Image (cartoon, rainbow, N blue to C red; front, side):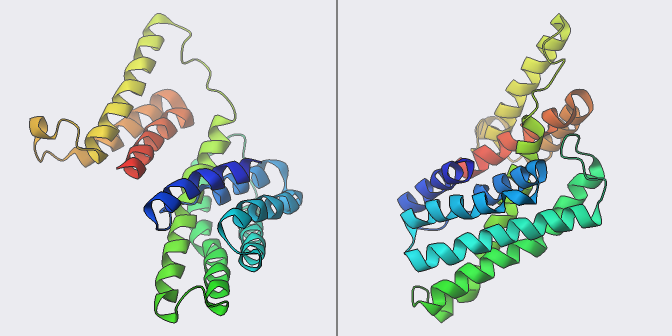
Length: 234
């Protein structure tokens, strides 16, 4: 159900704008579920991917993509657990994030290659556009995993201590508000006339550092995802 829902959310801008989405969240959500519940969840990923694919693609394409997505997520989970045996989905460490970022570009090739060549074989994609399609598919899968997998793993446990004292409540609200405003300034040009060409791109890194040191993974993830959301909407 989570895979299908996120797939439909990603399909809406693709249908409206008549081009593929720049980020594919479902595989990121699926990888998080597999890291939490184990690799025995792969049949559910196939079913979810197939259910989502049937709305957008012919049956033959939807089936091939469903198996490719499941294989991609299964391999990613296996490589993560193989190269980092201490990977803990309940308490992500720096090494856990690094492992995720290293493994993702490798395994994202699976779905991109299978899906693109299946479309080419069935005549739905010209040979002149094959490599471009593979690259954009690969890129969207990478972004979906590096953004959505940590988000699900971190936020499935609500943060503690954010609103337990008056000063802490004030700092928390200021942090959330600034994360929202700075991301709008960076990606939607809010207050551009006021600040001109000042290097606003660095501000989000200051917020991520503030969030990481003061609010842990939840804080850093808040600033990062505010920026990601406004980048997509911009």
